[in-house]
Image (cartoon, rainbow, N blue to C red; front, side, top):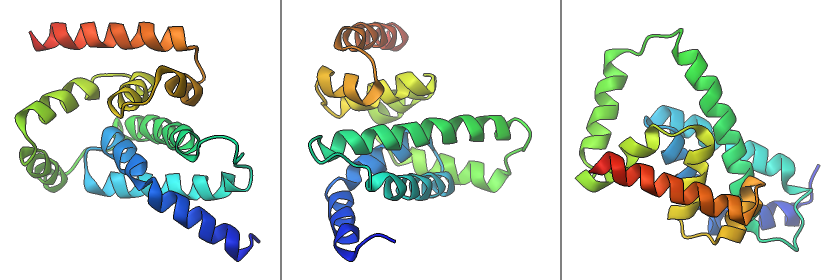
Length: 163
């Protein structure tokens, strides 16, 4: 069992970086119920791993890495499950209503991002969140050069699709 001060530290750090959780959940899940399930799963994994958190690294980098790994696994699991389960009309209408309130540019961006594989979704999220190439490389476990190359390819692809 973890000490109360460790729990308090964890809660303080997560509260200070909760926007990471929101961004990851919004990127990988379009409906509210799935976002809530993913957020819960991420929080559980963050808590389980917190005892091994190395305080010499930035908490946000550590949180991104765990959140994105959980989200990618969740996305893959949900995608394969969705092939066998038909969506009901009510949820579809609810998702449409949620996205209609977003500005057109944001809907276009989400539409393009939705077509990306899970790894590239993570890459574009970190880039749009203004992380440095070094931070992105650390979170995703690839080189900075690879980050730069992949981001340029994604930018070119998005430009082509928007024109």
